[in-house]
Amino acid sequence: MSLRTIQRIENGETEPRGDSLKRLAQAFDVLPEELVDWTVQEDRGFLLSLNLSSLSFLPFPLLGILVPLIIWISKKGKIQDVDKLAKEILNFQITWTMVLIAGYICLIAAMVSKMRIFDNTFSQFLSTNLMLNLIFIKVMYAYNLILVLWNTYRINKGQETRYFPKFRFVR
Image 1 (cartoon, rainbow, N blue to C red):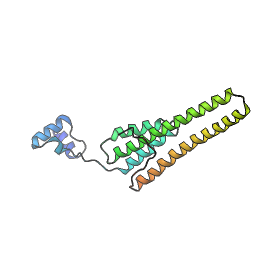
Image 2: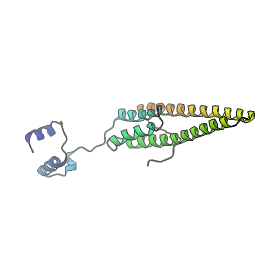
Image 3: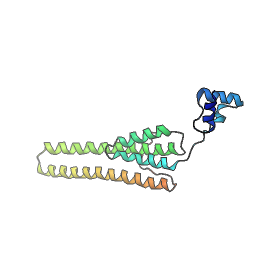
């Protein structure tokens, strides 16, 4: 290895990887795992960011799943509690999205039924059903928003998150 490579490793400018790690381990007569610090970091700021990334459901519900998933994959196993938090968020967001889609389907069914039927009594029922579906969707969005913000507060205080209800899709 070059002198400059060794200097960079000693100064913390780079971490030895691959062949360099093997050569250093051989020179010091130790295992490569003993040379590199593999400890998991504690980073509450990253956990806050991961939790807030689930707010991406606001413009499009599936983003509430995809954005936290991508962020989790980038730091999986490197930050303390990131796996547990990501699984909580993903399980809740998947459950929430499925319920929301069911609500949208009911809303569309009510709208289609209202357009095809001209019976006055049934038309009033569908109009009420349409309003209930719209209220349901607004309540779902509000609930998700409040839960994300509440859990952000809990993370900031060093407490465990509580996402509910949720089915365990990600284990």
